[in-house]
Length: 92
Image (cartoon, rainbow, N blue to C red; front, side, top):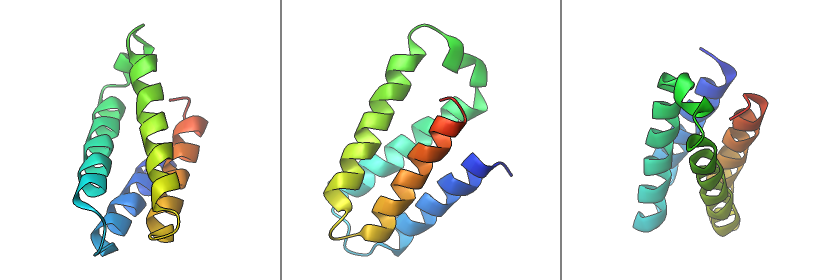
């Protein structure tokens, strides 16, 4: 399993442990995780001209979620930042 997949799994596990996470935040993160997994399953899609904006939007949404969750859910925020770092290292 790649580092990025392990990092995504770590975020998924943090989401399950976060009992008091707002429903909107949980839904956003689960949607983003699904989108990222679909991008990883179809890596050729990343190279298409319309995809980088989508990947950048996901990154912006993840960063915004990390900032909002930092105080109340530092484990989730840290896992989000780890995913962002792994995505950057993977060139996504």
